[in-house]
Image (tube, rainbow, N blue to C red; front, side):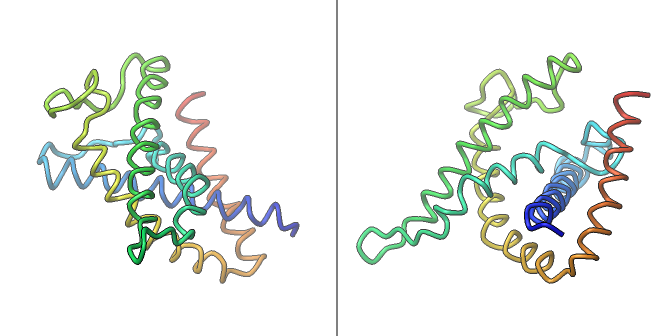
Length: 180
């Protein structure tokens, strides 16, 4: 397997893992925290919030080098602070753009932050941006290294089989959601 194809398969698995984790997070908030009851928090039939998958990849591509830089202010490491700020800015931007895309495609978006202080049109809010910052830190510093080790240990054959199977399932879901 060509290394580029291997890397593409790995990042596709990361995308799906974070899409599923995002869906679980959203359902947890809805059912346990807010006690609204269950509803599918994604736009697809399956348990994916693809905005989390895209956001995670964007954070990986844009902040991994900064995360690993070891930037210090004297003896104090400040790279984590810069990474946190980057996560807040990027995730807030993704959420804002995502709301406009969803509105154009479906006539609305799936969240409403008007009840939060410091919100913009109910699309983004300081509260959620900071929460995404904390979650993004957990994701970049704990989950992503774990996922990289796990996926990195897979043989090329296993990586090919797993990524192909989940790709067929995912794209079938996309087809049935948007075409049928």
